[in-house]
Image (cartoon, rainbow, N blue to C red; front, side):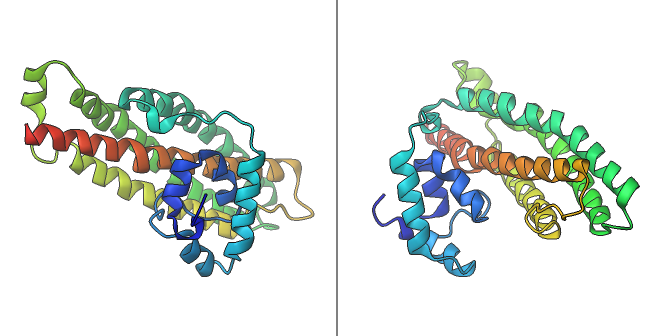
Length: 241
């Protein structure tokens, strides 16, 4: 972990997936804005880079978890992981979280007026993500799998300009938009901090929102920083042949 302060947030997440919770803890965006170095990101958020590096190093030294070998997975394995662990989670979590926020707004709206805005933002997040995942599952992921097909005629018939780059560009833009919506929710809720007088449902939905954002960051990281670049390289190899 030498020269960690000069490494990008993206590279830290790629090389040390188990450190992602610490990046999350300090709201350091390693997916959509992962090109920033740790030093620059800390400066922007007024965080001591030395103290953070010490925390990251201590966590790395004490961590005994087995890290998933995402960098060693094939594209098909990554896609399967994303579908099972992230797309399924998003689809099942959305109605539950939406229902809990709605209950808080209905019962305690006048007391916590900011939760009406949270409800509107999360509704937009839900609509965007459902449409987004549908495009990935029906268009982009099948195209990526085609890159690795052994059927040369099938590949030749589909590999027109923009076959991968065009949908990837759309997906990355949509990732950034949803990330900004969730950041707005985090800001409105003071980093998902429940008011002292909050009811149980209010506290639960804030915990759910926090978990939802953290899952999305890991989800986007796997796509933006591993799967999409892998597909781009494979596509480039085909255009050279």
